[in-house]
Length: 253
Image (cartoon, rainbow, N blue to C red):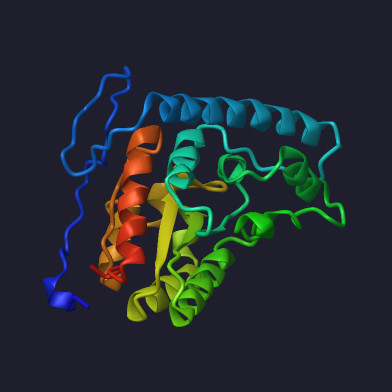
C-alpha cells in the first residue's frame, strides 16, 4: 500500500480527451487504447439507442405512463464508455440518471420502464446483471457501493464496484463518508461523478469552491481524474485504468 506522502496531490485541470469536438483523434499516450471497429460501432449504436430511448421515456412520463423519469440527455457517452469496459461481474450502483449504463449492462428497456412506472416488479431484473436498483435519494448509493466493495474485498473476489453520482451529490454527507471509508480501507470502488453543471436547480459554482470535482479526491488521498464526458473513448479508457487500479488493490495509489 502506498504511503499518503507518495501519492500525487495534484489534479490536471484539463480533462482527458481522445477525440476533439470535430471528431479528430487527439492522442494521449497515457490512455490510448486500440479498439476494434466492431467495438467502436457498438459504442456508437449504444449512444444512439440511449438518446432515442431517453426521448421516448420523457414522452411517456409526460403522458402519465411513467410515474417519474429523469433524462440523461447529453450524458450518453459518459455512461456508455464507462460501463462498456467493465467486467460483467463488476457491480454498478447507479443514481437515477443512468439509462445508458443500464442498456450497456444488458438490462432490457421494459424493465427500466417498469421501475419508473412503479410496478411491483420494477427493478428486480437489475441485480441479475450485477446492477443495484437505481437510487433516487441523492448520494445514498455511494455508501452501498463502498460496502459491497469491502465485502468483495473480504471474500477475496476479483471485482470492483462503481458508484455513479452527479456533481451535486459530492456536497452530500453520505458521499463524504463513502469516499472516506473507501480511501481508509482501500476498497475496490470507483467513484464516477458526472458533472452536468447543475445540482437540480443549483449551479456548480454555488455548491462547491473546488476548481473541479476531481480535486475533491485529494482530501481523501485518492487519485482524481478529469475526463471529457462527451468523449466515449476517453471515458472508456479512463474507467478501464481506474477499474484496473482498484482491482489490483491500489485504489489509493
